[in-house]
Length: 450
Image (cartoon, rainbow, N blue to C red; front, side, top):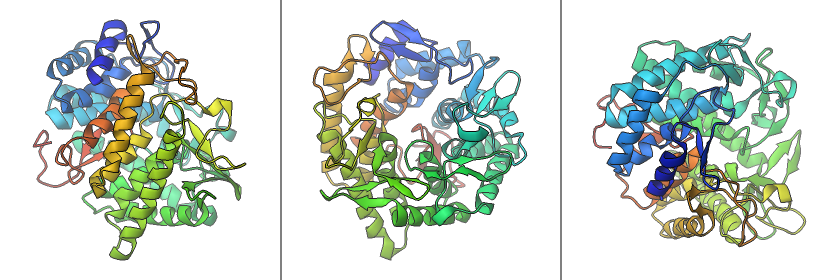
């Protein structure tokens, strides 16, 4: 599948950000501020891990010869960080090849002006040429978004380590300072924060989009520090306790889910993006006290099972963008606008973690069901495409092979069927785009046995 996705991208869209597999051309999009080759950079480490050597060399050559960082356009700070910087750093650590390190550092420098705000909380959009930054037009009252400014920590610590320049680490440590200072309603972190005042802008809490990877980066920061970053662990533990107390619910049919919170009112829905949380809670459970370990592993299993049900209850056996627990429906999309599937990885990500941490064979079985469904419904003549409605077996394709399909979905499926020592969870943490970064064991050498 990876070779098919890559070969078609190379043939029809090399250098563009994504492949449009139906029309056999490339898509540039407006998230990356003039940067190109998102699929190349996202796919590098997957090609390397899968030992697709010829394809990896093609991708590396593109980075060496054609990857231009002198661009002028509006970029998402978050997307550039997780896809480009994450992909380059991971590939550097896997291969030891300097080109990936130098491009990551150069790109990191271009993101720094986004932090020039009264609080040091970065704005979400930056012009990579001029350094001007601003907030997303749709974000309420010019606020920054928790998942965006909370998902820089892993990469920025590595940028400081590799460059010897402490500024990257200082920027993300300051974000923590602001978050520790501000009052949390019921111990929860709302999704919108003003970069000017450092206060919450509205009380919407979600473990799905807008919030998701902030929590993931707390537990992973602690793991990446070889369990020395106790502040990150404390913040994670406290956040999870508040989430469990206020947002975790059980449906009439016995399914455990994480609701969204809007100023104290619960919205009984879960986004596909929130399905990463089964894997996150399982990863954290490994390191909870003995009394809590089984509790969290059980919770992780229940949430992962609910996400599996969102797949199992659809006609294509792929899950919708969001699913609800109201009006008698459970784990199904009730709105037309939520029935699509864009090749997202979060459910198989949780399967991979649950497999590694429990070795219950059902997780491999569930993963294989996804493989078959992708092949049946998403594979088209020239690549893989998202679909507009998971509840029909003759779905319409959306003509987009997302870069994260190669970075995450196929990597997590591959790792689900690998031995545990391929990218062992003891030695690597995955950034939110599934790019592996090394745990800071003092004896770690780049491209040691990965």
